[in-house]
Length: 360
Figure 1 (tube, rainbow, N blue to C red):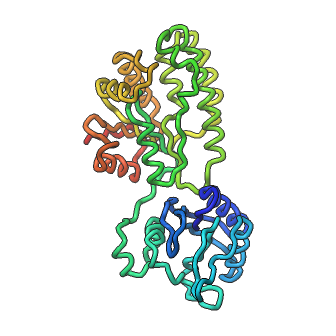
Figure 2: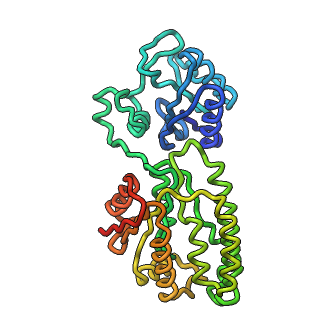
Figure 3: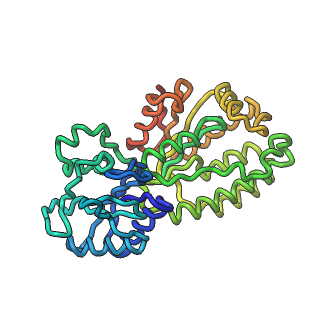
């Protein structure tokens, strides 16, 4: 699949949707990659490869794909200039690379695709999908991309205290694994700056606002997730509401809050695995200062330590899933590719239920 005109990402999304409705079941998708145009001078493409199961024979499949191309605004594929074909930009391009190992050729269709080994982005996508056998050996040897494992979990949460880097790592992992991402919308909470200045008066509204916003976000995103991504990665899990509220609220406020939480959280899915980024308060305060949010200047080391202790206590009491407690005090996964690789490799493994302590 490729698109270099209009809303390229949306063109790919609509093509997948129409293929699912008319052609068959899409079982796997590669990552979406931006690539330079191949064979002509034009804006770059977004490319993606998909694996699908279909009952259509090759030519019927081709007809359906070409009809989808036309409906998404595709015009003719090439122009003839000086007796030679010249490629054009297109809203969508759908090519059959392989059909269950079949060798097929007529005036309209050749399988395998005659250029399957000529384009690096095709090679990379096939390697990512574990289909190296479709690539000529000589071409595969020149490809720099190595097969990447898939995450053995459908829903992973990267957690940590304030300033631990959970949002940054979540974004990096989601980009690396073609994952749907769920990020906490702390900036939308109007009570948060007031809370750091006056926690006694603003603790309850800040916690209720976070709870309702997280509930709405998780309910909408996780119930209607993009089926063409490999998994969901979030930078928070809903139970953090209890961790923070117990630390911030008065007893009667907490009891009321917990009743509301218990009611609505029962409707939300729980993560299959949690990676908790553990760091000491000195490092956390430096990270907080580095990002320069005015209202976070009021955060103290004692407050961070209380929050971190509350996380660890909660995990010990509610370890109903694999929980990785990863000591990141000696890592800089933003600046160091090696450090990031250490963390990335952790999510490709399976773990027993319970707390796993990991130190580098």
